[in-house]
Image (cartoon, rainbow, N blue to C red):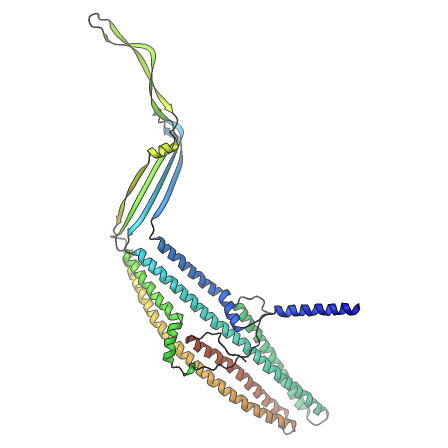
Length: 484
């Protein structure tokens, strides 16, 4: 029974361990780049700019459609008002309702609508270029951060291996010191070397942690402690890109890089801004239509009625007899009724108004003229920026070419140095083991060998990144890296 319980506990611990291990994901370069492109704040801002440009295009399309609006008004007049039934001013409360429809359509406005639509299409294209350029920059930054992590890992691996070698040498030396074969200073020298190596490992571990935090922040991952990349060692790429001429790479970069496309789009945007400004000097013709109707809630006079008041008036005499002719006197009263039906009033009181409106700009405080001059200056500035972008692209390509070639030479030199330092270290180790040299000379040789190994790792990843930058201008994706 106890054995069953023990096995159950062990099995449970195994599952917990497997679960914890599976939750600690190790990211590849491709995963890091794709995740950054989906979650980076700068990219999300650029995507919002694209959406904004698409909304602006809808506005430009809407300018071709006529406007159509309805309005309604219901009012109460409280206080001294004329009583329409008596004609007298009285303190009354009256109500009125009015309804209306209006529509306007632009017939001609200096081609403003057409130019605005063309400009909105260009603005969408420019924002898409900016989004793509932002993705390229983030991809390069992520690749550089990823390679920095790999460099720190390999650096730490080398330091740990050297630390183990020094520890074994110290153990063997201490035994010889205890036997009286070697002086005590040899052991002390190796202890100092061991402490220095331990300090270097601590510094490299801190650098590794900071490089992981830097990449995690770029990916917007909060769990810095558990974030890690795959333990992969990349080979130095075999490529013919360095055999290409800078001019060929520049021409290829003009097709693939978005800096030049953005500058060109900005020139075209400035040209349409100038057309829009000039359109303000032309007359505009607008068609309009108005419909209005109203209704009142006051009583109305339907007619007049006569009532005899019991008296008579002499209106003449009978000829011959002279007898007076009498007629009854009447009083008149207005016949008051309630308000007419609401929809009857709307039908009786409606009216239509339509026509065209011509607006000719004559004098507007020089604002239209100044706006034209302002956009002319902006157009020239955009053209200069486009020319500068071409020069910058050529400079960047030549710089990337020189950096890649220089880093390759540095890497090849570091390999030669490492081979030489390795032979010198092996020779110093043999002499030290034979008791011919002291521990100080041995430690110095070992330190130089360690430094040469670190320099190989540094120049290797520096060359890989600078080579990828050059290939990036040539249109080769940043994530194409060969690994062991």
